[in-house]
Amino acid sequence: MTQTTSDDDPLSISSSSDFSESYEFPASIKAENTTDIPTDDTSPPLENDDSTNYDATASPARKLAGYYPVYNTDEKSLSELRFDLYDEIIFFAATTTDNFTIGTDYFTQAEWDAMAFDFVKSCKEHSVIPTYFSSLVATADNRTAFADAVITFAKKYGFEGVDFDWECNQGIGCNIISDQDAQNQQMLFKEVKSRWPEGKLSTTQSIAGIRDPDYQQLPASNTTMMVEAIDNLRIMAYDVHGSFTATTGPNAPIRSQCADPENQLSIEGAIEIYIKQGFKPEQISLGIPGYAISWSLAKPELAPRIVGNYTSYYYQNFTGIPRGGKFDEKPGLDSCGQPTGYGGQWNAHELVESGFLSDDEASGGNGYTRYYDACSGEPFIASNTTLISYDDAESTVSKVKFANSKGLGGVFL
Image 1 (spheres, rainbow, N blue to C red):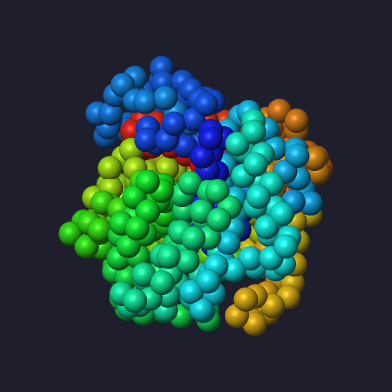
Image 2 (cartoon, rainbow, N blue to C red):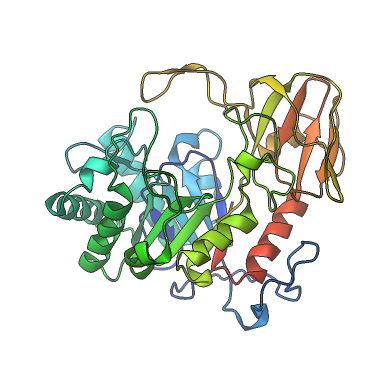
């Protein structure tokens, strides 16, 4: 659910699980508190990059938005939120079900009602496991029923819009999938917008762009419905490396020159993909992670990777994923009943609190050394046993400036 800090409030339906705060710039949303992002530096923090003609000084005032994940209320209660810093806050998240209703995940209806109404009230005063998405949008009747359910649910709590987080429409694991998912997803967005034209409609999509069943990028001619229906497309420009990749690597790289050939995903590439798919820069918001990911190193010494003028130490062999911070995923069963291990994730502030990073984030501690990787534009820390990829204030600002230089509608963390 999405909620602005003005007199009206939006809804978001989403499947990612990371705490986020976001700079949101859509000119169509009016808000009482606007946080300007400096536009004096209009060039991205990249070498030899003259690919944009965007005039940042002519852009509208930027806005600050953020995700509030209800599953992390133990870490940050609603009363601790700095509402004065945000123009838009997304209540994360509701879930899909198989009977055209909106679920409340592991909360009871009474608990959900209390949180949602309190959230909307607080915002006025001062998100989804996608298992059933495919079947819910498979036919015209299904799309109508699902759209009505979503809109009714959003309006019940006073939200002013909805965000659909169906990043990988071909799904994984036990998700129901269809070769028509990408097309049906767009028709759902068209249905929702036609039934609730005044509602803000957003979608969260993957760093790889919108793909067909064969994982090929859809051409602009096949994304027209989505482009015309949505107000904002949020790129989840992270999770590029993890337990699923051949080596360690940057979680959210700006550039991908030093990465393995089969994993050439980056912020720079994602923006190019979505522009080619027909989206206007001002429709797009760039995701920047507020969490870190870790690996257990195979060797204590870091091996260099030389690509052109770059020497990178980011890409190392690893043996597994260690336990992360306080709110890391614990070993158990996933939603499909498959066994899982630790997620290896840390909230960014935990790296400082654990002494792995100095208070000013300039150096490592407790056996960790800080490195800045110029090839990807992202820092990391490493000890003899562990490598951790993260974003600090410096890299986050660089990504905000990069998004601004490309004329994007915003960024979210």
